[in-house]
Image 1: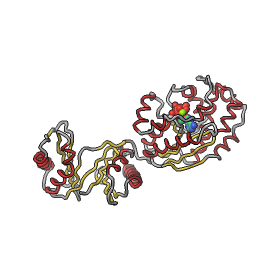
Image 2 (image 1 turned 45 degrees about the vertical axis):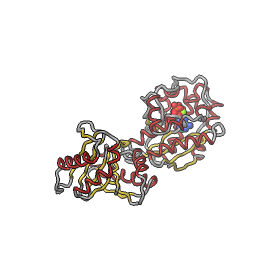
Image 3 (image 1 turned 60 degrees about the vertical axis):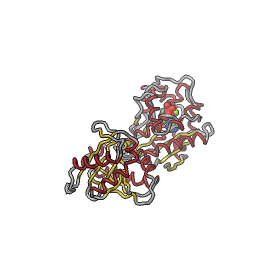
Length: 390
Ligand code: ATP
Ligand code: MG
């Protein structure tokens, strides 16, 4: 029996004129991701459904389902079997394809959609006859039209008939690439991978920038960040990952700046460097995992001081979220177990004992002006290592 994937796109339907560009982008993303995980498919678009038909033999459909669940821009999808356009074939395929699943539940109903109006049976007739056929063959089953365990759907289309059970919920959002590109500041913590996932969901392609301070931070700590970026890439597609050597700057801050301002000065310098790298790579904004009030550097005043150095928009998708809400997403996307591995981050290595929670810009600029960071910033930008993470 031949199987296909029927994919319904989400918010795309709302985008009017751009719709076909968005759909093409979604198809491109699905094609590439399925190819990387299970094999080659060919695609047709028809009435807000994308039909993905396997070209390669022996496609692992369970794995394909797992891949589709992670692709933004898909509202819902289903695995479906193809039947010929005659009623006997529909009956046989429905029983063969969904029999096992139906034997495992109590109630069902049949839903028929007939876009080919030349097909000799009406939708109510198809529902009635298929329902009766399934009831005759599976004695444990009964009909419940209001709240069935399984909805058996029969879609009579131009060339074929598709038969499937319950739809699977998609990841929602917009196709990655449809909204431009941003640079995620990624640490080894819980928050920044979630922030990246959230922005990819809105259709943004991701670059990731990580600041490492060897030998204070280890190679293993960097590997952990690489792993986290790779988890985000399962959803966002390929990430351009940049690792910046931040040691010289951090040592200089420690030596020359007042301790209570370490963190905020460090964050401002991170921003300056990140903007340089982001601009070079065509990114339109920075993204951080900050959440208001979570730590001293994330108070309103501290964020204002950090933003003052940025001539790019800074997106903070977690700003209004509680830690437990962030953790729920982190678990859902499969990042949490990696995020909590105990490796040092450059921020924590140089954390002051009593950070100032209400810094003033004047105070900070005065402290910074005692040191000329510009050449160090150039060196840090030049020392950056780039890699692709899939
Ligand atoms: P996270 O869980 O993302 O590490 P956090 O709660 O530990 O966040 P901070 O350490 O204050 O908070 O960092 C706030 C944000 O600054 C992070 O979410 C991230 O976007 C950015 N950031 C922090 N450290 C680094 C780093 N070493 N490299 C790149 N970005 C960083
Ligand atoms: Mg952190």
